[in-house]
Amino acid sequence: MQAQDGNNALTDIIQVKQEGRVKVVVINNPKRRNALPIEGYQAIAAELLAAENDDAISAFLLVGAGEYFCAGGKVDGLGARRSLPESQRRELLEIGLHDLIRRMQRSPLPIIAAVEGGAAGAGFAMALAADFLYSDEQARFIVAQVRLGLGPDGGVTRLLAQALPRQLLTELCVAARPIDAQRLHHFGVINQLCPTGTAYDEALAFAQQLAQGPAQAMAGIKQLCHQAYDNELSAQLDAEARFMAAAQGGAEAAEGIAAFLEKRKAQFHRA
Image (tube, rainbow, N blue to C red; front, top):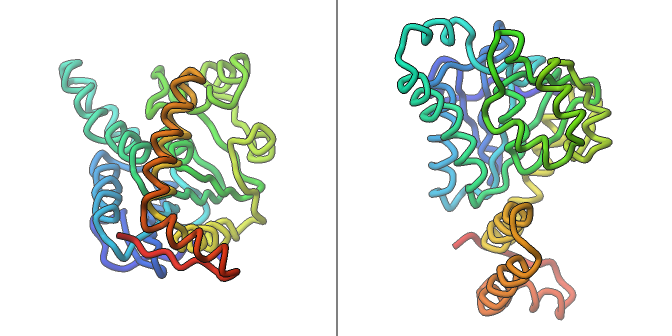
C-alpha cells in the first residue's frame, strides 16, 4: 500500500495526518513527481517543529504521494532566481531546503523517510537527512543538479560521504549517475528494502514501534550518533558519560530498569 493523501492541507502540496503517536507528512504533487517550491520545504520544517512541541507525537514520517518520493526543487523556480543577486539566491536556499535539513538533523524526534520509486536532487537530500530510510527495493536515486549546470545542495555530499567511498560519491555528483536502492542498502545508507508499494506501510509500522520508546533517551542517542562522525574518541567518551550519568537519574531509566527487573514491558510516557 502506498501513502494516501492526508487531511488538513497546509499548502497545495504538503498534507498531514496522524497515525497513533506518529505524524505523517505527505508531499502531494505526484504529477510533478512531488517536486517542491521553497514554501514546501518551509511547511515540512514547520510541521516538524510543531511535532516536537506536541506531547501526542513521538515520531515523524515523511513520504511522497503516488509512485515517487520527491524529485527535488521546481526547476522553473530555479530559473526565476537567475535574475536575483547572489546573496538573495543564497538566502532563498538557506530559508528553504537548508533550514529543513538542519531542523531534521537536530530534531529530538526520530525521523523516518519512506521512499517509493526513487528520489532526486533535494528529494534525495531529505531522504538522507532522515534518521531511518525505508525504500522500495526497485527505487533509484540521483544527485541530478550537475545536469542543470548546478551543484549539489541539502548537504547531500556530506551525508553520502559518511557511507560511500570518495570515488563513488564523485561519480554520483559529477556524472549524475543514478544509484539503485540495492547498492545503497549494501553501503548501509538504506535501513530497509521493501517490496514495491509497501515502503510506507513498513516505515509506518517501524515509526509506531519507535514512538513507544523512551523519547528523551532516543533524542540523546540521536545526537550522540550525529556527533560521533566529528568527535575524537576521547570527546565522544565524555559525551556518552555525560548523557549516561544524566539519564540514570531520569524517569525513563526508572521505568526501564523496573520493567526489566519485573519482567514486563516498559511503559514510557513523553514528558
